[in-house]
Image 1 (tube, rainbow, N blue to C red):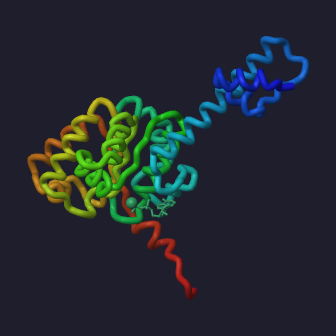
Image 2 (image 1 turned 120 degrees about the vertical axis):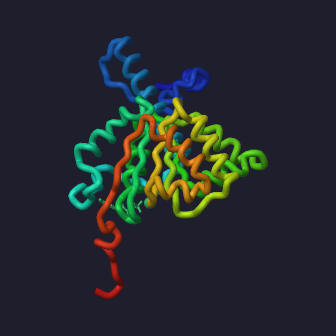
Length: 242
Ligand code: ADP
Ligand code: MG
């Protein structure tokens, strides 16, 4: 039975499973066995809370999985490669990942599956479109929200930047972007999806010299995957009238 004093002490020492009354041990346990079960339950509860918090912070716009990804349809990446990416060892090795290909070929899906897996495996993740990231960078001096978000990004193990190349960025924005990538270098893995090849990046960034310096940093330890095909949306187009 939980006496009020025990509950209050459990709260004071932050043994949440005990304080909430959720912990039920098996009968006939030794003192040691009981404590072991209690600590295990508390650890599981804490990990669960931390995962939920990291998932919130990651801001993944949708939950996608590797299992849902059809590698027969997509020729740019094999199941073996996807399995290797899913192990996430490349994040520990500070590799970057660049997914290039036309719209609808599964780049964002792959990025989201990686982000989701990483969150559940204890990594700090941030997901942003290139446009949103540029906005955060531009407003860091005038917006407390942007500043806080940037602090989180710099603490992350993995930064996902979706859709580089849909909209051009100004020279000032490109400089901000370059500074961030330089700062993350050697600390954070960067995953970028783009509908344009590297030649197109110089055009988007409006400065070939900056683009070369950026690619130099990004591709030093990096895997580049070229997604191809006519696109999942086109192949699976849904209509109102059949
Ligand atoms: P991209 O980012 O390359 O434009 P998305 O990843 O957004 O493409 O894919 C578009 C839609 O098609 C998404 O709903 C995604 O889940 C789905 N999709 C794309 N490729 C595949 C695939 N190979 N297997 C399963 N679903 C896919
Ligand atoms: Mg996309």
